[in-house]
Structures are given as C-alpha cells and as structure tokens.
Image (cartoon, rainbow over all chains, first blue to last red):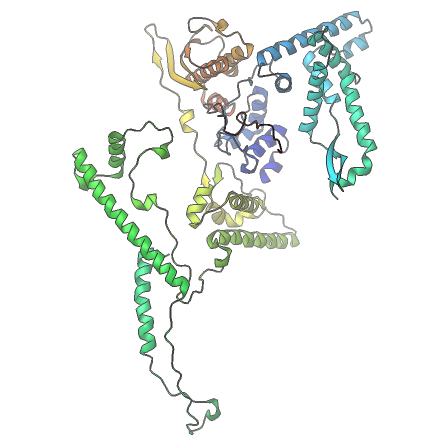
Length: 230
Length: 395
C-alpha cells in the first residue's frame, strides 16, 4: 500500500490504483487485469499533472473510454449512472430524453420560485441548476443501513447491517426510479419526478420517507444486530 | 539441474555400480570394543553377509517413465527432422538453412486456415516446445526425496513462498532493530510496482515446472506484493525483481501516423478500418481547417442520438481542435453507437499527428487511443441469455 499512502490526497487516484490490482479485476473483462480505468475529465487530468501523479501512469495501458463517457461539460457521471438505472430494455435514448425533460421541468419550477422571491438572502439560497438538485436529492436519500435476512434457528431475521457508499447510492437512485414508476398514469414522468427531486433536495417527499422508514425498521430490529457475527 | 537424458544414463550406470560395489565388498576383521589399546585380538566378530541393495519402487517407476518419455521424445524429434527436410524440399529450399520462421511460413502457405483461434491452426514446432518438459527424479535410489518440500506436492512453488515468508520475517526483524535505534526506514528507498508487473501464472508455472491453480497463484501474488510493500523491501530488490517483468511499452500508441499533403498544401491523415463492435470507419482529418464535418456525405445530423454526437466531439473537445480541423468519414456496418465509436477512434488516432506529444499522452490516459475490444457476449446453452438463467424449479 506504499502507493496508496503516497497519493492518498486524491480519491480518484486511489480508485484507479485499486482497479489496476489483479485481485480486483473483473472476472469477464476482455482487458488484461493491469489495464487502468481511463481518466476522461480534463480537470482531473490537470490536477494529476500539477501534482506529478501523471508520471505514474506512463507505463500503464488504459482501457478505452466507454461510449457514454466524454469530457464535455454537459456530462456528469452521476447523471449517466442515473440514466442507466432508469432505462428499460436498453432504451437509453428515451431514458435520456425523459431525464432531460425532467431537468427542464426542474429548471422551470426553480426559476419561477427564483423570480417570485424578493428577499435577496432567500433568493441566493434557491438552487436553479437541476444537476445540483439531483445530486443533493440523491445524497439526502442515501440510507445508512440496510436489512438482510439471516437464518437462525430455522427462521429468518431481518438484520440491520452497514452498507458501503456505492451501495447506498444505488439504493437511493433505485428508490427514485421505483417512485417514478409507481406514479399515476395521468401525470407525466417529467413533472412527477421534477417535484420529487425538488422535495427530496429539501429533505422531504416520498423517497426520503422511504429512507426514514428503513432506518426506523433497522432501529426496531437492532436486537438482531448481533446475528451478523454470531 | 541435470537433464533427463543425462540423469537417466547416469542412473543406469549407477545401478550397475551399486551391484558391483556390494559384490566387491571385501570383508574385514572387525574388533570389539573390549580390547581397545591392547594387543589381544579379542573375540572376532562374525562378518555380516551384505544383502544386495535394490533400487526403490519409486525409482524404478520413475526410470520406466523416463525411458518411455525419452523414447517418445527421440521419436518425435526424429519425425520433426524428417518432416522439416520434406517441407524444405517441397518449398524448394536447402534443408540445411531451413529455419523455424521458414517452417511457419511454409505451413501457413500449404495449409491455409480460416480458424479464428491461433491455437486451432496447423503448426509445426520442435517437440521440445510442443510437449511440456518433465521433472528430473526428485528422489534418490532408496526413494528418499531430495527436496525439503517434496511432500507438499509442489516443492518448487512452495519453496518460493517459503523464501518470501522468511524474507518478510527478516525484514520485520531488521525494521525492529532500526526502530530500536530510533531510525525510521528510508522513505526514498521504498520500492514501487510502477512500470512493472508480476510474472503471470504461466510464467510461474514455467519457472517451477509445476501446474498451479488460480488460488495458488493468487497466494503467490499476495505474498510477493506484501514483501514489496514492506518499508525495508529495498534490501531484497534482486529477489523481488526475479518475479517482476516490465510492462509493455506504449510506444506504438505514441508514434503518430505519417502526414500526407493535398495539392493545395493542406496536411491530412487517413486512418482506414477503425473498428468498434461490427462497425468500420475510414476517417480523414485535414489539419488547418474550419471545423467542417462530413459523415457519409452528411454533417453531424447523420446521428440522431445526442450521445453519438457527443462521442464524435469527444476527441476534438479534449484536444481543443473543434474548429481547427476538417473531418471526412465513411462508416459501414454496426449500429449507432458502434458507428460513432469507430469514427471517434479514427479521429483521435489521426489527431496524434497534429497535437503535441504531451496531449497524445493525455489522450492515451483518457482512453481515446485504445481500441475497444469488447464484443457482444454470446448466449450460452442451458441459459436464457448470456448471463440470465432459466427459472429454477425444484421439480
């Protein structure tokens, strides 16, 4: 872990080093295990160049950038992940259109709020960028624990266990998608989700309630927590 | 290590020697301890009859195996030599100067194969390369093993692991002694794995002449990595270097393709058959340009998808060349994202000639200069799709 310590300042750097280690290689990958994940954002590369971390990558081959990755300022990894979670039967084009419509709706709502507001202090606190709202909504909905069934003495117990950051992000995104699918047919997905995202960014709404429900359930099942190790 | 043939020959002679030795043994009078230091000859101890020592069962089995193997290899080598001469005559070349390279070419010419996997194509190689080498006898005539780790089943491999472990404990002791004297291990001397990789499983197998499982190889990499990451690992640089090999250089990517010129002095680079999935693209990039783009005679509107359009712009945005080059591309085959990916690769591959080497390196790290090998995964029998299984019913 010598390398890790040396470059622990940069999260992305650690991520890349981990992925290059053969122990973490994907089972079905067509690339050999020593191939690195590409760093396609210009800002990240500039950061690496400043610190001299780029020297370490000189002899390492890199995988090709995926077809949904670009250095454009309109690209955001969280957004593209969310598109991947919400698409059905590989209709990525449609999923992207729908999400962009949602963003448009969010922007409209927030701008209306922004223009209505007269108090300059409150006015500056209103977020108008839909991507920022989406990210905030997702972070607000990330659960801290989850329940896993554990068999003890013939019956299953729902045992609360801690989850990783990646997993909790997945839960939050999936809840949003499920929430959107449960909506009434008369409302469009874009309108419904726009409201949902704005509410979640203010820490209320259905998905936040879902998170709190899970936490409550974990709290009530805390007596089983020791089944995790015994 | 002794080669098999030599060892085998020596063993056969040794066997005879042993018999000779035992029969030529001259019995000598031995005296009891009761008369040490006196002139009295004492009681004479009866001479023991020495039983003819036989080679052990294991040794005999080994000798049998070795003979079989040697005979087989001899025959194979003979056949190879004869075949080589025939081939040379067929090709009308002097057999004496017929090299392995000529053999390969001749085989490729005489038996053209359309098979995809290189392993499935016909070949002709010296038998020492085709048949795996066998270990020499690991035990002596009485069946006692030479190697300490003989009973592990994989002595050479476990010896490596043992060496790593002993080195690690030595380093720990060394570090403790340093710390006792209030000296911290030198941070600058620390080793790093940058630019090198561990020997692959096949390499280790070749080194040890033992078949390894994935699990065992994983153990090896974990152990040697731990040794490398020890703060005092610089003491055993040479030992660690035995199991490292340099990474493949990225020189081919860094060398830009040759630039041609049009009649009016415009520089351009053409890249043909850029692959992505089943799409292929021919891309030409003209250098001083104004940002014109034509794909099969259309502009960027050739693609309806925004993602595909983004992909075309990716290398241009990355190198800040959006309005500095003209691009002409023709694509065939594949779908939308395949076509876009093929053009993207063609643009970035030809842009190497018009940007600085540092930018080329950055493009490489961004994954623009790597061909995307990924293909659709095939459907498997007994499964619904590539990965999806049928619904499982107990009965």
